[in-house]
View 1 (cartoon, rainbow, N blue to C red):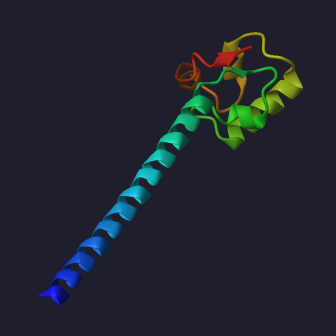
View 2 (view 1 turned 60 degrees about the vertical axis):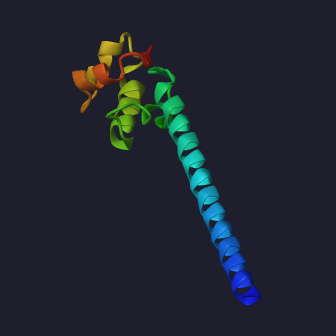
Amino acid sequence: MKVLSLKALFCALLTTTVFFNTNLALAKAATDSIKEVKTKEVTMQQVVYLNTSTLDDLVTLKGVGHKKAQAILSYRKQSGDFKSINDLTKVKGIGEKILIDNQGRLKI
């Protein structure tokens, strides 16, 4: 009977340890995911100044990838500074939808 009790105790201890470590790993993964989402939210919320922004700034805009960001930079280099946010629609590939989607983030 003592042998059976020791085996049961060992199994219970092993099960508890595995369960605890699994929960710890899941909690860490959840915390990391939350931090990643918060970082993306901050990036998505920052203001983008059309006349001074870099490629990395522009790609944070919704609907703007590297290609459109490069087009914005090229347009700015050729035509000079943007006079209004609506001037952004003069860039090939940029339409009203991008202006609407990024309405609160765009500044001159």
